[in-house]
Amino acid sequence: MQEPAASTLATRLIEWYAGSARDLPWRHPEFGAWGVLVSEFMLQQTPVNRVIPMLEAWLGRWPTPAALAAATPAEAVHQWANLGYPRRALWLREAAAQITDRHDGAVPRGVDDLLALKGVGDYTARAVAVFAYGERHPVVDTNTRRVLARAIEGRSQPGPPSRRDLAAMEGLLPADVASSAVVNAATMELGATVCLSRGPRCGDCPVVDLCAWHAAGRPDTGDERRKQAAYEGSDRQARGAVLRALRHAPGHALSADAVCPEWPDPDQRARAIASLSADGLVEEAEGVLKLPSA
Image 1 (tube, rainbow, N blue to C red):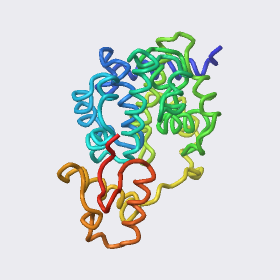
Image 2 (cartoon, helix red, strand yellow):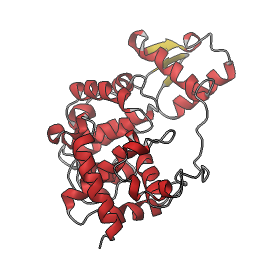
Image 3 (tube, rainbow, N blue to C red):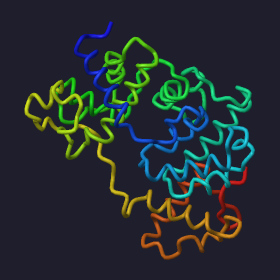
Image 4 (spheres, rainbow, N blue to C red):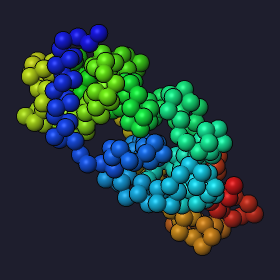
């Protein structure tokens, strides 16, 4: 049973979300489970404003799992363009093939079936089950964790991700299935637009009077989150440069010597090519690099 304080928090979130939620394509009822799944792949560590045009282009080209399953890996990687973490493109294509073969082309609704798809982890499985099919599960992303840390635990930033986050979100969800999906979405939205990591807009928060962190005077309780290394000068940047060169090359292929020859660190360039090859994102044969063909 939901605690009274949690019930009040949930009610406030539902009311706020009804008037303040951003109009995002995957929130439209007609968007469909396939669109929701693709959006969740793309939104991993990628800002919403970068995802929306890429998502529309992707679904315009491959409106069903079967359509993507029939594409080549090179086509998927090329279409992924500069979204980052391009292994997601290969995983999504493989997941599309699994959906086509195992589920008659329909994205499954059960969390266990979703978890069996390539590249789908606990968060993505729960998000698709909840936001595409209206199932009742706690869904926890970075924004949700920050809201829970502040409103309930009185901390300025969440700790490292753990299963306790799911338990905390479960305690916030109403028993009503439809309302629970709204609370999941509203908590994420609050963290993304109001309860920001830096410069939280407490004056605009619908639950500020219920927030333990605000009541305590907004203390700095530290930040235990793992910091991501800078992109500039990183191996990730080198990998991106190699893939970009191949995406724009005729036939998506270049001689190895012609791929980023001016890169300032030859060893880093070699590491980037080797790691991309190991990840199946490029193929190398007889001195030629190309995007994967099969």
